[in-house]
Length: 123
Image (cartoon, rainbow, N blue to C red):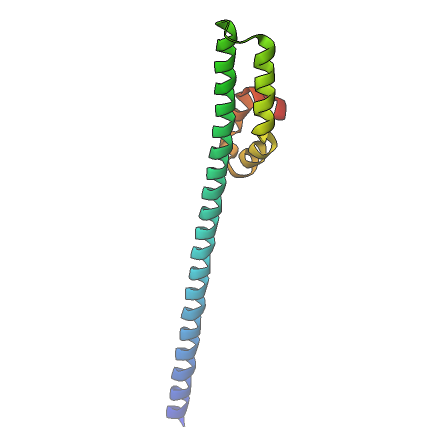
């Protein structure tokens, strides 16, 4: 009879240990997938913020070049304003989306964004 209990106990312990290992393995795999998914979302949002920021900087550069043309007498100030307005309508910069991405995904960049001309109005 004691041999039967030893066999039963060995079988139960083996099953319990196998189940525990399977649960631990499953948990680790889910944790790894979650970290990978989080990193992917963070990278995607970083790319989106980069593209929006690049669009914003291009708009600022175009405005600066246009103002230089005004200073050189190649454009009137009204022509510059019309050009700025038409470019802004064709390629609007989504400042609220930039602010959201900064606040949610990249809070460490908030001070730099607040120091920018648009960021100080967006806060």
